[in-house]
Length: 272
Ligand code: DCM
Ligand code: DCM
Ligand code: DCM
Ligand code: ZN
Ligand code: ZN
Image (cartoon, rainbow, N blue to C red; front, side, top):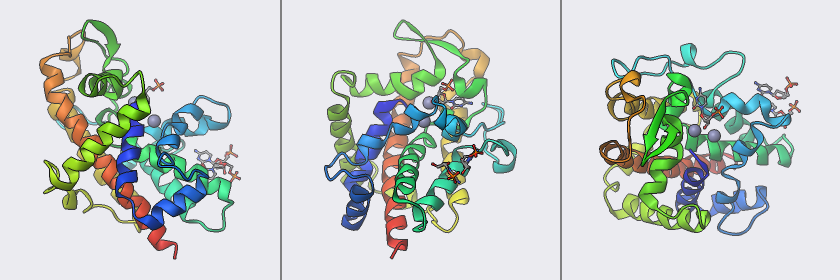
């Protein structure tokens, strides 16, 4: 996701975590405001092109070598690069480090920032797809602008859906997160929220992350590339395509925020 998606996921999680989880992460991240998660949600993107952060650049995605729209699917052994890792192995690594009380606090804070970010990214369907580097190599149009398909899914659709995210992104994200929180608590997602946590198992972060990755990757076949990668090249995506994509982005952001809260709660509960 672009910054707005990550910040929105963080605010949804902030709405759902337990009081003990709030206290733990406010202390670890040295921020006792309501922005303690939102404020670090995009940090991982800011380090991926730095000298220190180069080794993390492949941690934001898993390149599923499937064949949309014919078949979708993610396979850890096939798709997670052995030498460089992927979003699934990164979630395992940084969850383990967050749980490791022998690590320096600064290292556990870094791990927390990566976990918050990568649970967001694993829910972006094109972060679980190999075709054209997750759609980065597919030129399209969106409301007349020339963009690539990945950017449309990271940013353009959300921007059109929510509106005004450029002027005051944190305020707009908080407002959208509160609306999605309401939908999870008593709206269109209320009957689904228990099932959203079914896969969450702190004893097996790889299996958990693979379930989340597989669910998001299925949208590549149904909604992202319903007629395949060639058919979408140069197409205008601001109308009918947008109408089908926006609900998928909305549910994926809601799931990411709700699951992030549950994951952080499981981590804090297992520390005592
Ligand atoms: N590291 C990692 N994953 C990688 C590469 C490195 O977790 N794909 C970690 C292992 C080391 C640190 O980063 O603790 C620095 O690695 P190196 O000394 O290999 O640069
Ligand atoms: N690191 C990591 N994952 C690991 C080990 C290390 O991301 N499993 C990163 C975070 C640390 C850096 O590498 O800041 C240096 O770690 P080390 O001191 O273990 O080389
Ligand atoms: N990306 C992806 N899959 C890839 C390569 C990149 O999902 N195989 C994502 C990471 C960023 C965006 O695409 O969100 C742009 O990546 P880059 O700047 O590396 O081109
Ligand atoms: Zn992206
Ligand atoms: Zn990212």
